[in-house]
Figure 1 (tube, rainbow, N blue to C red):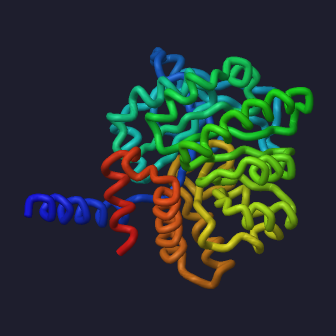
Figure 2 (figure 1 turned 45 degrees about the vertical axis):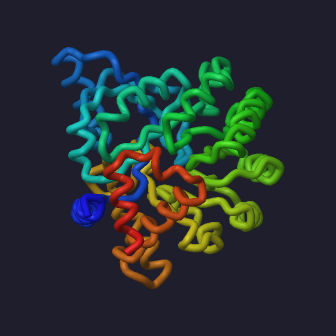
Length: 325
């Protein structure tokens, strides 16, 4: 009786949360350093600069850095370091899978996980970050893996060919570990889509999610055959030919804030995937609400196939439970 009462209460909370929650996946591209605090003058200056670029971001901005590179949409790529409180994350009213760039950043993120009710912090080694690759340690990765349902962001990045061998070595270690301990895994593949698919074929894993996928039709079809899912953001919608070959039951929505939602409707923030839902609905001849429900079911199926439900925050577990009804 007590258990049923708690389950009923959880489902009632979940139904309310689902009506409020935005996309299944509003991935926060550069999580950044969560420890420093910024002075009022510095914050005001950086916040003004960020807002001028169209980004609505909660939290306290501690640094904005021009990386000198370009993002996958062709725009100037920046790194943004912020501090953000649990209440500010909750105010997004969305379940957010937040990616990390390095093992140290992942450790900081996972240390705060118990206080973040609707955010799932990831374990990441970003392939575009040299220091993250050089500092990768499999034992440290394995220890952190026990603390999360989500690995992200990992993968290959073809922008700097000289690092591909190191990227491949790190990713092979990670994939081998994930064969034994499956997780929902966000995979970066810019400039290396074919190479990534080849690695997934040689070292297959449950829970692969191809983030901001730019592969051609042949690579897309192969990835679908291998069981991969695809997380689609507003910029991603331009890859129309490949999208035609991705079944809706393999799609999740994402923002990849602040890069992938550069052309999204305001407010530009993690969790706001309205534009993506509307476009996917148009392409599939269904309503945006149907797209959202399907994405929730897809995420639930992913957690079941990877057996990661109990690693998620309790409120996220409750929402997924309600999504099956």
